[in-house]
Length: 207
Image 1 (cartoon, helix red, strand yellow):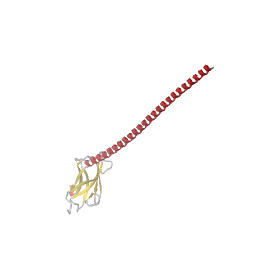
Image 2: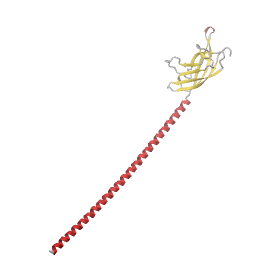
Image 3: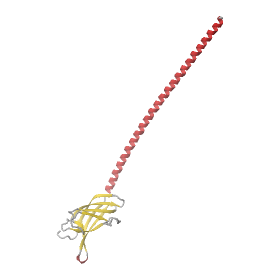
Image 4: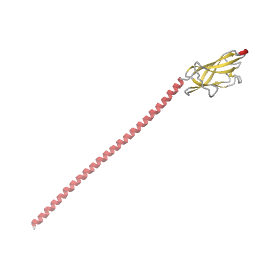
């Protein structure tokens, strides 16, 4: 009986020891799993932080690219305006007296292109003090002269081909007048307020 009881006790101790060993191993495995989970969480946080940094860097690049694009657009506009100014037509004009048949005379105003692109049209603005008007209008009247005069006409105004009109010249017209013109070239570019010095020639009574 004593031997049997001893054997039971020994088996009980062994079972308890086995339980303790298993529990310790389970606890170690759980701790290892916890450490692995913590490591994974740390790595995930690091990846999230890196992704956020990349997003911020990408946003900064977009902002920089937009700023560069706006600067390029502004520079392009400045260059286009400078080129447009450099291509401004240089014009001058003269009024000449023409002797027609039977002692009849009239005056012809010619506007010549001295430099710049060939033009498709000119609008010449006559001020009231210029002393020049259309031959069929009142002398000294301020108005515009259009060349070509017909809207459907196609002409090229160049150094060889001036714009011209038959005009009347007032008795008190000055020797030289400064007029302004609006010009359009064959590509559609427009220049407004172009100064046009005009020499008033011919025999004008009272001058």
